[in-house]
Image 1: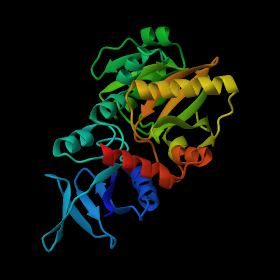
Image 2: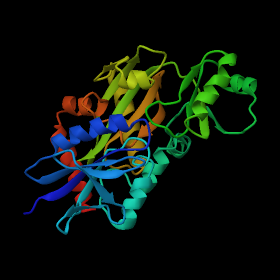
Image 3: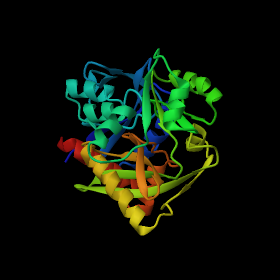
Image 4: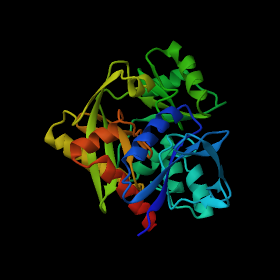
Length: 327
């Protein structure tokens, strides 16, 4: 049986590309070399390339996502392992392109990726399935805003966040009315649409869910204890938060979180790695967002959860490749 060619596709167009390169490296290192020939592919705004063993960059042909190796040899991939955080790998753009050229890939398809990258639409769809979320107001750039009216409706403190952005970029916690304008400007710098959200005073958890061996499983529930005001970019990537796995929840609450996380995953028709964020208040988990390509560097939550669950990174990644090959 000949080994399959697997491209680990990393990078991206947002500030998250640095995290994606680390995630890609872990997957590259973990895939079973007895089964696969593994290649590194980097996608950046200005260049798409294959990085060979000598760190030489060879361009990717966008016509069929192949690489000319010279001597008339062409490298094609059986599966692309997509581990781009943010655009274009988490918002559906890359998936739509791969679908068009007939390239197999891991994770969610175009529609699920585009939907879950949009916080407002995700929460709207999930509310139909009875999954609770914080009360929020959706605003577009250029809308006339009555700040006092918003504060009357949502109370203080509140959160202002870009509707489409990963890694907690552009999020502010607003405690006083006069902080509102700066928070709006900060969020609008990331996206033309924003959500202003009621503050939920509870326990924040991050839940890893994946379809593994034909079954939807909760890999783990991690409690996030930020050292800052909330789980922002610094808390996520610069160690300014404490992550406790498994989360300190009583049995009943843990079951409730697991049920809601599985229901959200299945209701959205998800596939592959996912991490959803919830705030638990008075025993009820309120959903904040769903990530379809969560961080997968050694410091990230999902690999830590897998370790505790007892699934090796090699098996977790191999499971994704095998599912993609069967598509």
